[in-house]
Length: 143
Image (cartoon, rainbow, N blue to C red; front, top):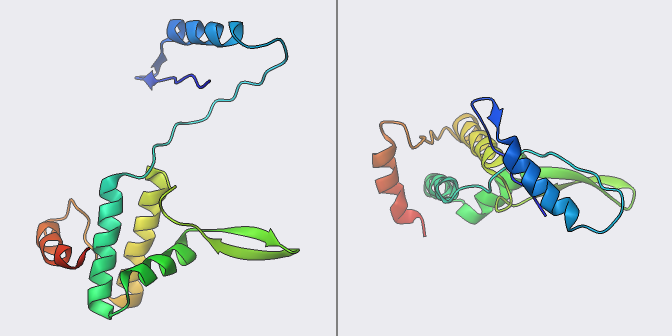
């Protein structure tokens, strides 16, 4: 069982936590338990995913490289982990579907910097003035 805790303005409702914890422990079998506190992260948003594919559509249109290939390249370059395979360290690319919102924002920032520095392509953020025009133009290529 997971007990969600919300801290707002420096305060936590301990009465709520106490009752949930008491219920959890009363319904558990005898034994020793560890309690772990982890920060809740939410999965990447639909908007983040849509922005990523809009940007990849732009890069595809400007370079001629398929947007799926751009996605795979960026995952290998910016979203990887090091694993041991047969005693050797290997770089393994991860997809973006399991990234949380913070990880996805970092990934998008890296894609944006890479596109600007390596390809000379400026990828605007949704809050930028020119984003609407960018979106209207490149969404025709985003399917």
